[in-house]
Image (cartoon, rainbow, N blue to C red; front, side, top):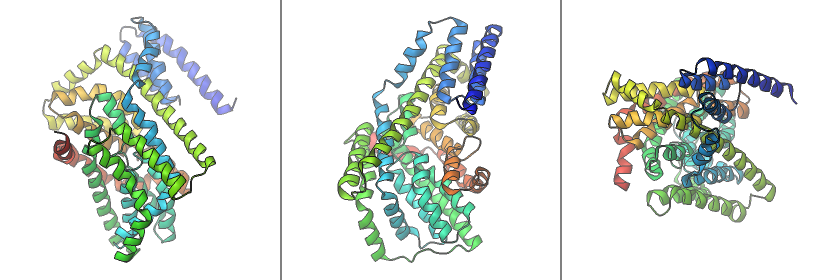
Length: 454
């Protein structure tokens, strides 16, 4: 057994023994024990899914209120949801799009569109992320797929490495906001909200994020005399559009199908996989059997991790709800203020802090049962709150110590994690500005769903 794994296992066993003793000592306050056990599990390096499920099991054993078999039943019920079928399909579709080589075609088309602006490749970086967002729905897939091409191209053109990494990291957060979106699917399942409406609600905020980041790139370009990396040409625009046309049909199939009501999000995800296979096997002929197997195994691994987190968080959320923790939280927050603006401010601060320390899917599954009742209590639409939550947690992907996007870009760029973190800090400003706008001006997120669905 590897030394690192053995040390983690020993630490976990020690902590487990401490939990049992602590549980007997604090049986009068079992909820405090529940939160303490999760925190201690996480800081000892235990995976999030095991931390959630393990602390829930310990809670059940210590309190003795329900049979321990309830833990397994609730975990199974937590992932027994038809909308969750969209998760593996969207993951597979995004992985296939990376595997068949469409990222270079998207990058070329984005260069023809916005490469003529000051700081051209910075704008291309953002534009390519907006296009790829309609195919993947995951920030890490964007950073890992487009990030490799974008950072190399910007380095070769003479851009600062930190600037290249920073704009790539920030633009990758657009992926889960513009539909399709894996976090939106998870939120919709946990909140019993319409996933179609959530997808529609994220469209305009995603474009706002792109616009705000382009303003920041423009400011950097003027300050550092970054060049225009292309001259605008209708001929080149047409050539690159033709080259990327079949790839650009992917977001049309997904987003257009969902927003028109022709297909459900799950059906759209399956259609995206079928289209990606068509592109790879028939049109571009860049997908071979070995690559397909590799992509499939990556999809299985990623899906298993996500569903384990959802299952573990489901039992954790059930315990919070059954012990009226959510009701106490609602009472506490509304006791401070019933002003929707102040309530949204409080919830945003909590989400922002949680984003520093917790992975997005886990944060959504844990916090939705606690926070959503507060939002509803003061008249905030669940769809609007879903966009706020996902956007806030996307910013968390750019902040240490968790910062998954930073870890991915550190690996693909060869830049140390600390430098990636520093490079990303300026780009947090436009993202936070957009978060504030979306939070306090609901029309940004609710106009399109109201137009299409209501």
